[in-house]
Amino acid sequence: MTPDVVVAGAGAGGLACARALGALGLRVLVLDRQRTPASIAKGEILQPETVRILDSWGLLDALRATGARPVGRLAIRDPAGEPLLCLDYAGLPGAYRQILCADYGDLRRVLTDRLPPAARIRWGARVTGVLRDSDGRIGGVRFVADGAEQEIHAPLVVAADGMSSPLRRGAGIAVRRQEYPHGLVAFDVAGADVAEEVSAYRTGRGLCLVYPLPGGRCRLYAQVTPDEFRGRVDLGALRPAARRRAGDPPAGRGAAREPGPAPTARGLPAAQRAPGRAGARARRRGRPRGAPDGGAGRQQLPR
Ligand SMILES: Cc1cc2nc3c(=O)[nH]c(=O)nc-3n(C[C@H](O)[C@H](O)[C@H](O)COP(=O)(O)OP(=O)(O)OC[C@H]3O[C@@H](n4cnc5c(N)ncnc54)[C@H](O)[C@@H]3O)c2cc1C
Image (cartoon, rainbow, N blue to C red; front, side, top):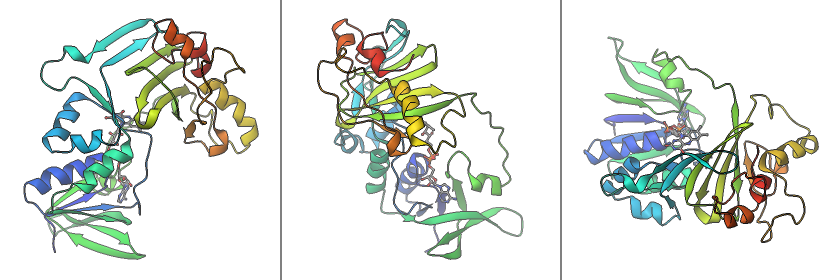
């Protein structure tokens, strides 16, 4: 079958494209280099308009069933947890007045499982370049699957193969990328009872972002200097630094309950994990749970 559309990449962008074009009756083939879709710490905060679109596609209930967490507020706070700016989503017009915090893996799964019949995905197919017709127009892609280079023709080719997009490069489309002068380390903290809020703390070390995730977890992003974790192979030496970022609670201090399982520092090997626990004292003071307030919250979050 010659598809009408080839989409390179089965991330949220490629899958949404396949969903929308497939619903128009177009035959869509999505190619993704991953053999099995990986879960990555990104794309977790879904804004109300995204939620509305997912609902219009009949996907919202399935996403909610994964435990996606509704959140009504986005706040920028100082290290003590005092609000500098609060966006209360309840004040939005219309029916969609909440953020949904979901796993990116779950979102991809929900999109994948409910593609229209006219759209299909081929995993383990790495797109290597574009095919051009005699006029120079792109009319398909070259890809490698099962160890063999193959070609597929289609009148429309969509490059949804990520930020670096080899396909975009192959098509000769230039972008000017500007790197941030810092990096972010993502921690997946289990057993963290954080507020139903996306909290962005403006700390002495830069951004610290916290929000709830399915399964009683929370995401914690901590700003780091670009090379802070790069090329570190001595895991033992790295552990204190990782603990400082996530906060290493001194034994017994400010803890209302036992710490949950160790959080996973995404992008760091498992041995670089640091413990996490809910900011019970911060909650008692009326600040959002987990606030880096110098009490239990500070133990959890960097300053
Ligand atoms: C740390 C971080 C946090 C973020 N948080 C949020 C957030 O909270 N909310 C939000 O809305 N957005 C967020 N974003 C942005 C969001 O994740 C991206 O906009 C979104 O993932 C883009 O989707 P995509 O499908 O275009 O690309 P991707 O998700 O990168 O997917 C690209 C796909 O292409 C595949 N691919 C790559 N190369 C090839 C190839 N040669 N051949 C075939 N397949 C290939 C990959 O395997 C992958 O599956 C975040 C981004 C980052 C980095």
